[in-house]
Image 1 (spheres, rainbow, N blue to C red):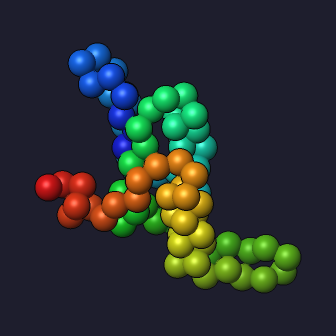
Image 2 (cartoon, rainbow, N blue to C red; image 1 turned 180 degrees about the vertical axis):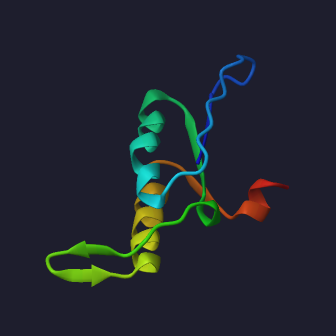
Length: 84
C-alpha cells in the first residue's frame, strides 16, 4: 500500500509495504486524513479465513478487501502499473 502526501512539495511521503491484505484496511484511514492512497493489489497476500464455521478461500478474502478499499479509500493498481 502506498500512502502519498497530497502536498508533494513536503518531505513527508509515508509508504507502507509488506502488508497482509487485511492489514491494508487500517492504513487506508490515511485517506480520511487527506492522504492519497494507492494499493498495489498483487503486492499483498492473505490466507484462508474462517467466518461462521465457513472457510473463506484466500482469493475471495483478498478480492473482498480490495473491492472495499477501492470503493471507499483509494486507487487499486497492479505492480507493473505502479512501477511505470
